[in-house]
Amino acid sequence: MKTKNLIISLLLGVFGGMLGFIVLVLVFKFQNRDTSSSGQHNLVSDYYNNLVYDRSSSDFGGDYAVQTSLFGSLSGAGVDFTVAAEKCLPAVVHIKTQFNAPNYTLYDFIFGTHPRRSTPVLSAGSGVIISPDGYIVTNNHVIENAEIIEIILNNRRSFTAKLIGRDATTDIALLKVEADNLPYIIYGDSDNVRVGEWVLAIGNPFNLNSTATHGIVSAKARNLNILTDNLAIESFIQTDAAVNPGNSGGALVNKKGELIGINTAIASRTGSFVGYSFAVPVNIVRKVVADIVEFGEVQRAYLGIDILDIDSRIASELKIEDIEGVYVARLWETGAAKKAGLNEADVITEINGFKINSTSQLLEQISKYRPGDEIKLLTKRNGKTNSYIAKLQNKYGNTDVIVSQTIDILGARFEPLSETDKKRLRIYHGIQVSDTYRGRFSANGIRKGFIIMYVNKNTVKTIEDLENIIDGSDGRLFIEGLYPNGTKAYYAFNL
Image (cartoon, rainbow, N blue to C red):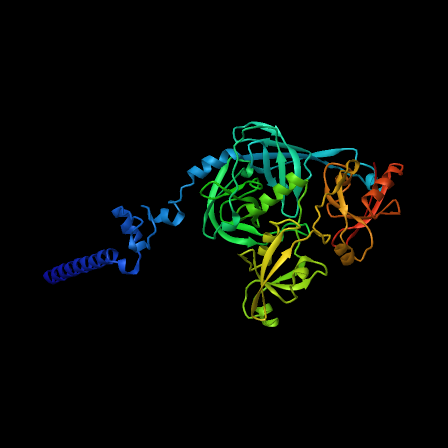
């Protein structure tokens, strides 16, 4: 009996050993099988064999593959940002702001008096030096309402900055410090940015100076509806580079170290980075900066159309063959598009050779031009492609340069109300607040876009009317008007 058990145990051991040997051989052959016919390589074996493929390798279609590990290849370890970081880190600044928030009492609200005390509010963000003589680009929301703007360079030098101008429709602001020979970042071309391209985000998240993170461009022309201005232009570059509070206004650069965007927002339910960040394209930034420097404010161009994105449902309802371009739902009566010959129900597919597939793309392209500039449009109508030349206009229906007027005692700038807005709001007179800064208006809650119709019960048709009413007043103002969304508002305060 003992001999029988011994024989059985011996046979089982031999069988187990043979089975293990067969499995080992099969695994070894599987890991080392020839995969060149499929154009792929086993990453594990490549790592251990230190394989390097040159540009002429037919297995990679002529592309260059560097030596890498399995995990390195998945995380993009072959991308080198050291040169871009060395060039750009010194040109990204830390911005600290302060403004005094009024503490209103019930007495102040009832009698329209100024609050007797205020609380300092501190905020922080980032900015990008774009010229050696001290011009700095940031987000409008970083410096909005700021009374003190401090700039801290990468080398810890600090300056007090002057606000040159800002544009809420694109969330861009331009600052200036008195300095020379500063490091700066050159402009790239955001039209040439491609989805999948590696990028570097530089800023000051959580007050951590000079922080760089990398990722890829994951989408373009994103519209998030986060800008509150009714004429806002949103066509963000979306990336997965980590951006957190404090990064706003910082640089998004390509591998060459060229500025391709200004980091502006994140998609988050927690307030911190969870996967996606968004930047204003540099081609929009460049035009906004140029307008502010030359005119003091942005010269916005209009094509004079109301448009819709095209999806399968709209294409079916409107009997559109191809899901491309944007649909012209309405033409402004004296707008540039109607004068050029476009019709309602046309589909715009290109602007100056740039393909258009969304309303955000169209707005981004138009934002690069000024009133008076001519653009070439391609449209489709009943399956036929047509070409037009349109001369862009300002919001008043002409090509004049718009320069608003400032009333310093109110801390605000004003411009005439367009006929289009008058018709839309069904009003016959008024002037519009084009911007506010430190002064009576901001202290009393009057915001950009407010339309003044009456002051001290007197009709206001022009900016001169407002100035004359102020001159003849006893220092008390009672202002009546409405906001662009139709909400009526009333303000009373002493000068």
